[in-house]
Every structure is written in structure tokens, then in C-alpha cells.
Image (cartoon, helix red, strand yellow):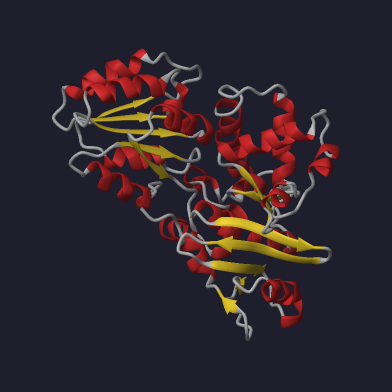
Length: 386
């Protein structure tokens, strides 16, 4: 039931190739990477997990490699490989020695550690598969989630059996998803001088979904002291753990873009809903609007779109989006009925930047003359193509 079926199909097709490169699956915790991986393996494949409380020595990779070499399928799968010290160097040595003798697939939950090892050591030897949080199509088909529930609660598959008891569901998300992601994937494996401050940055960020927040304002909401540079670094770590991304203001001038305050996008709405109080009450219509906008932004980011916002004094456009197929959309997201006068900022932006098409995404797919309607379910179904 908890299987990410699209991810499984990608992994299965790669392992079916005659001589694939090392397959590297990176993505968030608790979205079905392990389940999809195991479901894709042949019966005699060697599957090992490095997800232990303390880092392992790289010699275990050599042991697992030799075990896989003795099987008929000659497949080696290693889960959470970033937990193994010096993993990329050992894997490179073994791969160069026995190139294509084994089919190797590894997974990881830390983009920073994984990509550092890949780019510095395994260049030219791997293909990357970016696992995503569950999109609405998967959540609807597997768990029969309504669009409204998906927006409010997100979808971590392991949490869904508790959804009828929201307090228990919230405890599961906090203890089994957020804490391992921060406590094990970040604090154990990255140099973090102020662990308490990192946790505070996360809590403040998930409290401001789809909001533009200056780092100096963020400083004012924290109990600990941290420079703007430190806060930028901690936000980047949260992004590398697939938790929170700060998108930048759109500008044709790159330097100006980098200096603007970020707009916070939380990668799955469960990460913020689990902290709502009282947790048993449904969120307000105003907050639902923020959740809905966040859902759209998170899905576009996870599907590989390049995402920005735009703001000029009192004018603001929710998202300026560059798609993998060459799409250039300026997007307003509305959870309730809207009118053309409410879209003045969108229209003004597209007049001054005519290469972008004005678009509306709404819960009921409202249509307004002169504005392209993007079907909400189709947007929330989108994913990376492999």
C-alpha cells in the first residue's frame, strides 16, 4: 500500500538494462524509497541498509560487493549510503575494478552529502534518480485522499494509517519523519555549530509557508543568536534534507535575485500541519489558502521546475515558473473565487515581461478571460520525467 509506484517503475527499468551505470536515488525520508527499491529487486539481490545511529566503516561495502558477486542476478542495493564514511571513494574503487560486473543502486536522504561524493568522486559513473514527495495522483489512488485533505495534511505514506486520529498522526510526523531528518540526516552528518538554532529555523520556516520572510525578521523570531550568513546556511541544509526551500525573487539581474528575501516553500504540508494547535481542529480558510499556495509551489519544485516569486512595492505574483519543457508561466494561486481586478499584479508583470504567460491555478479550476487556467489536479500530478 505504501509503495511509490512511479519510483518503482523507474528503478525497475534501470535495473533491467544490460549494463547500467551506478543508479543513485536521492530523496526525502519516509516517501517510499526503500519500499520501491525492495519491490524492484530480484529474489537473490543483495540489499543492505546503512541507516544505523552511528556511521559505518566503508569496509562493509567491500563485503557486500563480494556477496553480490556470488549471486545470479549480480545486483547490489545499499540504502542510505551517505551514512558510510568514505563511501564514494570505496564505491569508485570497486566500480573501476569490476566495471559493469554488478548492477549497483544506492539511496540517500541528504542531497548535500550525496552530491558532494558523486561530483567529486563518481563523476561519469552514475545516473541520478530524484525521488519526490508523493504527488496528488499517488495520494489519491493509493489512499483515496481528497484534494482538500491532501492540501491540509500532505502525504507521507507511513503516517496515513493514523490520519483518523490527528493527534497520533501529528506525533508520528514529528517523531518518525522530522526528528530523524534533522537529528540524523543533518546534525550527525553536517557541521552545525548551533543545533538548537537549526531546529528553531525549521520551526519558524514551517510556520510561514508561502510567505516572503526577510532573514533579519527571521533573526528576530529566534531565541538563539545567529548571523544572516548562518541562517542562510541553515536554510540551505533544510533544503538539502528535502524539508524547506527558500525561493528567490525573479529578476533579470542575477546578483539582485540572490540578495532578496526568500519565499518559504515547505516540501510537504504534513511538516507544518503537525505543529498546528489545537491539532484536532481544521485550519482556517485563510490558512488553507497559504497551504494551497505552498502545495502548488512544492509540487513544481519537486517536479524539476525553476521557481521564483515577483514583488515590486505593493505588487506581487505568487510564482514565476520556468518549466522543464520550456514553459514560462507567471502564476497566481487562489483557493477561493477571484475576479480579474484581483489579478492586476499578474497582468502588469506579464505586460512588462511578455515572455511569461499569465496563469491561474484555483481549487475549482476557475476560468477568467485573458488568463490561462492551469488544471489544479494536473499540476499536482506532475513529476520529473525519466
